Length: 89
Image 1 (cartoon, rainbow, N blue to C red):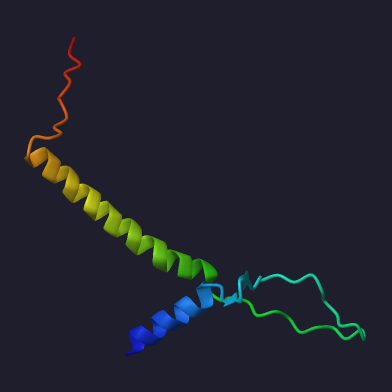
Image 2: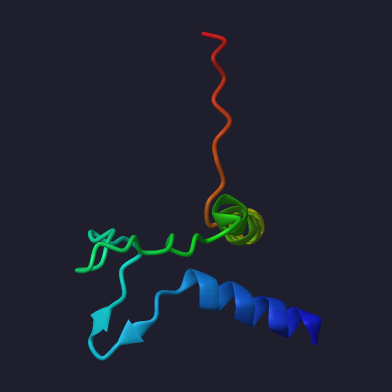
């Protein structure tokens, strides 16, 4: 249950929401209202780099495992077998 909540929280903070057909942007060009009041600070996404690493690291690891196993399968069936070059000449 906690994993589902964590996943939903992660997705809700990392995926931009669509409003109609336009995306909301994370930056703004206005810092004050027409009356001169200063607008509050925009929300900052916390742990941005940590989130990126939490997504990239597992997918890199899984991709590495898949490619390693596929290379072993190709070599096992003699589809691709690297030749041993002797450089003793």
